[in-house]
Image (cartoon, rainbow, N blue to C red; front, side, top):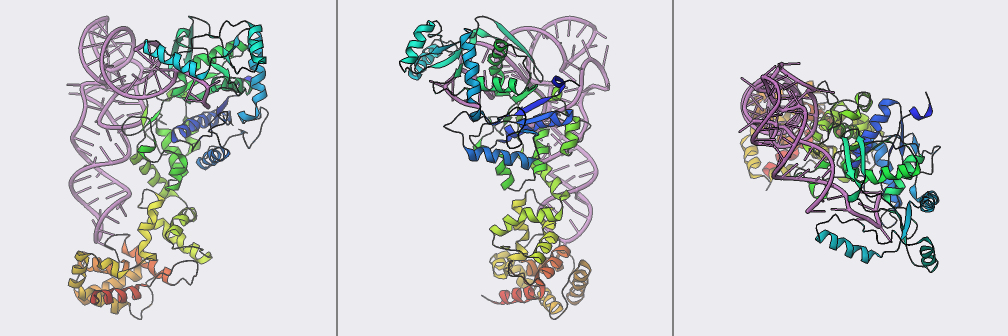
Length: 503
RNA sequence: GUCCCCGUGGUGCAGAGGCCCAGCACGCGACCCUUUCAAGGUUGAGACCGCGGGUUCGAAUCCCGCCGGGGACGCCA
């Protein structure tokens, strides 16, 4: 295998904010392709927008990538033969290449002020013309340009786009795309401060980093002809291009803040599992085939083919994401679930510094709640009955209060069956106890269990009782200072009765 | 405004001329399970394949036009 047969793909976010799920999906497609083909996945940071780029955003993008499981084998943090991988550290490279184009007459200095350009844009737009750069500085003689530079006049370097030429390329997902250069203005290569503009920096980097497949968002298709012309100017072989469609919100506009969570970190904070988000994202615009959708990343990579990626934009469907997440929640390791839920429990003030025994307890109880929930941030609500039992709160509800009074015999029997007895540490013990209450009161079914639920959990709904009650009893046996105390079933029965009698 | 891209049930996909009066999944409805809410299981409704013309014995699949949506047009990426 020769070197140029090795597939090299890259994901190159600009660190100007949180990693958007749409970009994460682009990153995922890159990763899947590289993984499936034994290629190299490169991570580069495009931080040439000094005004908006931050170190923190770059860092959090890396974290999000790792969290999703999209590890890269070359690039920022990891290193490699083609660095540096921060564009801000490659300024001298872009400058040299811009100078080269200028010396060959393919690029030129432009002295137009931003105000001038804005006015120009306004007028061409009004005249119904494409608002491209008009080329005012195209033919300034070189020595005049040099003189003006020496006089300290600010200037950018622009690339000379050849007139009336069709630029054609075959997009791997879209097929043949054709642009005529008449609609393209001369793009800025280097800004007046010497920092490269996007269209120049990507080309230089992708070429120098030997990228073979450029997979990026659809919003870049119209940039592609400019970039192709740059490859041509340098005599470089362009990579293959694949433009993946956009991710839309429910109203079919570009997915944005007003649609809810849009960044990877937000999804993490709401308690989505990384494998769920990644799996869902892979399904948006692509299908693994054979009717199976819930598959591990490695398997997705095995099946992934760029040609099969859909061309139309996709609506981000939170419901389906929830379905995927539920699947992975049920499959997740208890210890991991407990660890992931800890922050949510801490936020409620229930488990501030859990010790070893507490952790084991949480591991036994968190999966119970996680099995019936969409997201981990919903777990505390399903576990409230353990750590935040309150008979009086339950009885604030007039309907519940009335019911409690009506079923007083069951409550009494329950309390006496619990009093002084060993804790109900498993479902058999609970069922035996419930059977005795049934015998005593003659109540069965809902009339029997609902009062028991009310008294013991303080809630009208929740986990199955033969799971919930042993969880209560085991919690009550915990001697812990790092976690809020869990009252036992016997205590609860007494407290509830007292509250029914109370005001 | 100009250029580019897209268009299969509410949503995501399958379909690459006859196997499709269109299949799968999410969601939705019903039912089952059950001591409750969920979860889970079963089952049902839901698409004139954006519209109109062609080509063809035959089109969701090919061609043309229209409409609708999106993207781009920056010293942002």
